[in-house]
Image (cartoon, rainbow, N blue to C red; front, side, top):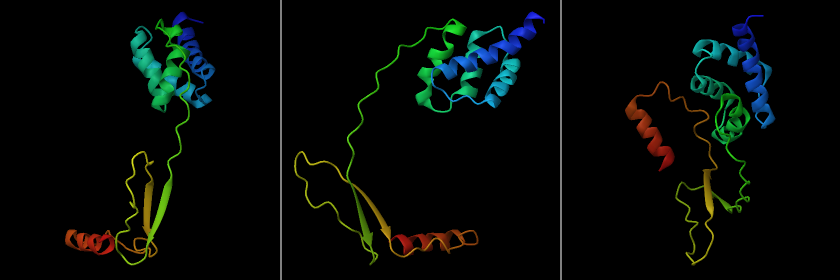
Length: 151
């Protein structure tokens, strides 16, 4: 097997395995897509290889560090240290207000110092948009529909 062919076969597999070792989900099809991406950018520039692999294998910004740890050594890049996970955030209380008369519900009863913020979700007991066909409306009709259903 020619050296270029060997590289074209082994490099995508090695990059995918490195990403998997660090916990990234890399299905077999992604390795094939990575091989195609690497063939498009070439095998002579580690930066192009890095960005092609990152475009194919990383699906969430939270995965970038793990990706860098997994493939950094293969491309001669420094591997970032593992971070300790942050403590879980405290839950925020949520209040649900039902408005059945079309007015605004005021849930901000007190503003005591040190009081925790409460998120408020509000909805109407009457569902209007399920049956509304907004595609055929003019701009004026859409605005009128919006104002009558939201105010």
